[in-house]
Structures are given as structure tokens and as C-alpha cells.
Length: 453
Image (cartoon, rainbow, N blue to C red; front, side, top):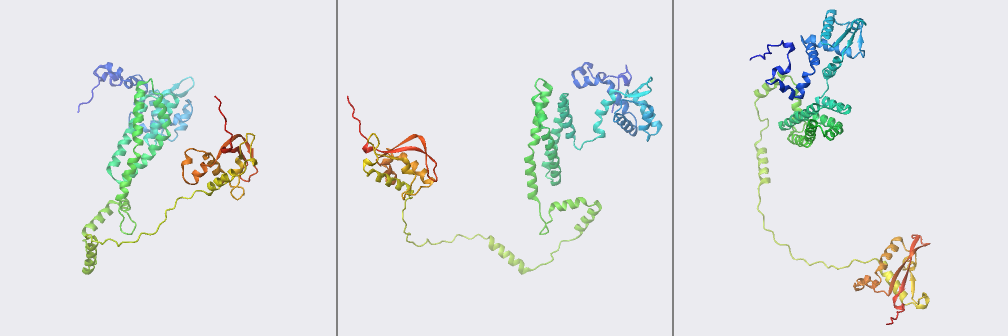
């Protein structure tokens, strides 16, 4: 394999990113490459920090985080020795020298003290996941996006990384569903539930990012892709449910012991490899033999099975004998008694002499209260009876109801007309306290008006 050669015009430490492109101006077309080229101090500091043996690199990172976590911007040499008393002095001197070369630490001759530079804080922020790892990459990315959105420093590449993580999780969950493995499905379902809870907690922020991305083309594009990836991931809940239901249907119970095939798999997974080999050898070396063999029992069972499953032709059955139809009566639905009582009361009033209840116009009248508030026996009517008879009164004189047979038509043909008043009168009735005033006029006694030409 041919190694990547650096330009001969410059030493390797002073080379630029554009020196490795066919067209050096292509660096300007990439925002990421342009940002790297303009952050050479941070890149050089990282190179110095991570150069050398692995143990020495971890020591440098640990000492850097220890210094930043003290909350002091300036430290004397005595304070450095107190913080790193457990480290050998020559190792401390080597790390401090490297920090000064990488511009992580500065030295003030007049104050005789070390100072932490802004680059040190930037490196610590970048390496925070290394010393404080999160349980899920999705949680770390979501926290970065939510925090950057709250501070107003959100960039498109941060949203793009979150979208890529959602797509990767979608592929992993799809592979678990396609595998059909019960254990892989249940593990993937636990991870899916955890991811769904995280997305649900950050859904408001994701919605705000999508809605506020207008005007920024890059951020708008990745925001739309993020919304699509989020909806695809959340839609997988039904797929997990169907796959787990299929696994439950395929589970086999071993006899009446209650032990299922899942229990056997779990037990086998807990056994050592040597134990599994021993069990396999025993199973292969042991031949299958019939413990109990009875010819007559097998014949009885076989005959019973054949007799149970044998198809029998339909036998002809005679028609049932003739029977006398039972005597029946055709009865109509009985109407409430209040309808007949009201019609009988109005008929009695029509035969009363007109002089007993005549108004100023010479018309025989009766009050509505007298027709509604008492039943046929003169007892105070119940509320249901009053309401029912009040609904029957508009039938008096109705042109269509007059042609009906029975009690409804008899009521409509009564020689009375209903006229309600606008005032509401009180009543001493036990069920009705207020009732609209009204009159029933006997239309046969109403004087006719003579029209003159």
C-alpha cells in the first residue's frame, strides 16, 4: 500500500489541508474543511495532547480534566503538586511541559503562576463524553441538540448527526424484527422503548427546530429529514407488537411441567461450553426406545381415532308430522287510559248547559287547569299524567287527526278549541307549582259574524 506523501515544499507539521486536494480552492467549498483550516490552534493542541503512548495520553486527559474541574483560572506550582501528589514528579513535569507547548497552560513570570487558556475549556467540552459516557448515543445527541437550541447556537451538522443516529437505530430494529429471534427481539424492544421515551421528551424541541428552520436552507433540509426519521422510528411500535405476538404463538410448553422452550433457551445460555458439549454427547449416544408397548391399547386408540374422523353420509330423515296451529289472538297495543279519560271529560262538558260557564262573548269556556290537574276520579294527577294530557290538547280540532279511528280521532273530533295565554299562574297542586293559563272554548256556541258587502 502506498503511503500518503506530504508535499515536499513544507514539513509535515506545517502542512495545510488544501495541500492534499487536487484543487486547493476546493477547501473553500466545504464549510467543515474551512472551519478546520481556521481552527489550527485547537487541532494542534489536540495533536499534542494525543501524541505518544496510550497510557501517557490518558494521563494527560485526566490531568487536564482535573485542572479544569478545580474552578480556578490560575494555579501556582505548589497547587499543581498538591493536586497531582499521587503522580511521579517526572511524569507531572512532562505533562505540564506538553500543556505549555499545546497552549493549554500559560505561564506568567510576574505572578509566578499557571493559567488555563480558552483552548483548554474547548478541549474539555469536546472530550466530555470520554470521561462521562452516556448509556445511549441517542441520549447524548439529543442533549446536545436540545441544549444548543435553548442557547440559540444550534448548527445543521448537530441535527444531521441526530438524524443519522435515528436512521441507524431504525435499521438495527428492522434487522432484529426480521431475525425472528425472541431474545434479540426483546432486547431490541427494550432499546426501542428507551429511545421512544427520549424522543418523546425532546419532541417539543424537535418540533421547534423544524418550525424555526425557515430561512436557513441547510438547517431546514436536515430538520425535515429529522422529522421523517423520527416518524419512521416511532411507527415501528406496531411492528414490534406483531413480531412478539408471533413469537408467543410459536412458544412450546413441555408437557404439563409449565416449562416453555424459552426457559430451555435461557437455561442453555447460562451453561458453560464444556457442559453443553457433555449434554450433546449424552443426547447423541442415547438411543430412543419405547418404554411401554401394548398392542391392544394402540389398536383401541387407533380405532377410536378412525371412527371419530370418519365421514358419515347424511341419512334421510322423514318430515315432521302435521300439527294443529295454536289458537292466537290479535291484540292491538292499548293506549294510555288518560287519553280516554280526557275525551270523556270533554264530552261531558259539551252537554253542560251553556249558562254555567259563558264568557263575555257568549262562548262556553273551561279552564285548562280543570282539564289537566285532576284525573277521572277527581284526585290530583301525577306529573306524568299532566304532561301527557298537555301534549294531547293540541289535537283538538286537528284536521288530519279527525280522520283517525279510535280514541285519538274521538279526541280530535271533540267540539273544543284550545287557546293558551301568555301569563304563568301558580297552582296548589302537589306536583305542579306553575302552569300556563289557558282556556278551552266550545266552538259550537261561538257566535258567527255576519259579513256585509
